[in-house]
Image (cartoon, rainbow, N blue to C red; front, top):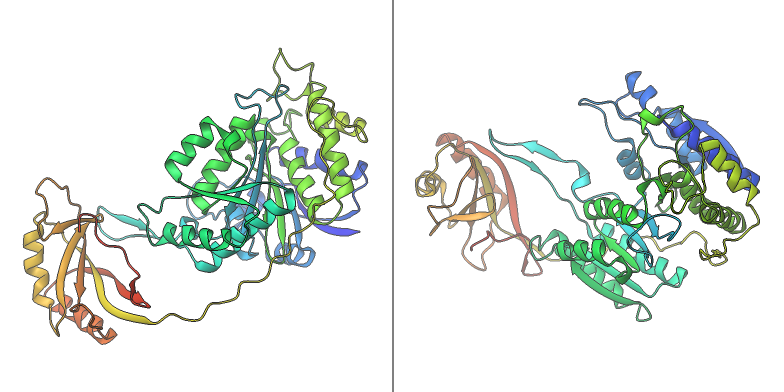
Length: 478
């Protein structure tokens, strides 16, 4: 018997959770349920996180969390509970199967059967943003080697466990050579350890186009957080409906299971919502906790119900559906089909499914790190880069010179183009002569000189080499 934490959420959440629990308990799930309250009620009670400390303790004690969709109130100051939960509990892997149910659910891709594995903790979802000038705000994209290694290894282990043949990586490392470049390098390193599994890499834009046009070309996809968030919804929709998709969020100690759709408050209380997405999350949960026989029984009964044409309003089509039902009636139909297998859709077998136990990340030996320069970011309202260079060069010294000025990443000095549009946010790169290092003391001196020269410095970024290789981007056009 496994104790799980359940949150019924907001909007349609309570209805689809009740339906989901009714189905899996009827199938013989050996679970105890501890219910917590999260979401809109907690937010509106003054808790900006949407979850109380005692609810956290319940989740951490039980390790397994089945969550219905929640509503985050409009307006500033409210944190995304999904993002917070994934980060606090170390749920680094988001797993979203996207499988066609043709011809019973409308899709242009009848042969689609893929899984998107998305890094879940970092990337732009670190949520570190600043307004730095009147015209420019920034969001920091954080990619770590531990984050890359954990998610890529999970993708290959998942593919091996599920008998899948290929893992594809999507990045944009032709532009983001440091961040996405690290993800791609780690993918190549780990792929070499799995010679039995085909691997490939696509640039995200053409990869996304290929996914939308020919999803049958892919098997398991692994990618950084933002790309995975967008494309997993795209994949679910072209498979048939976002409302049919569930997801697992897996960490080294805890796991959370959910539908990928929202709380749909306009449908709340009307016995209309399709519980399939949350039910799919529950099936993944049952596999994770080792109750594979129950998971198999539920999934095959669900497939049989879809095949029988018993559909909720969101997937009901006159040509392929037979009966339009509500949330409760759909759950009852699935329960009646427990023990049955679909005839035209492929039945599932989960004998090999279990929680993937991956080794914990082992920190690598430190590289030799040298400080060779600094990027000084300046708020300046002029438009002539040559004029700014004349001002900023007044703070040179100790063998460290202004080498370049960029605006929004484009080099505008020296030898810039007059056609380049510039904002009030400038990056001024100071470097020592090639092969020479500088001390951090110089950076403090540089900032002091900015004050004396009335230069509005807004941030600095140290420029390091690691084992002699630059750890920073060059300006576009350099």
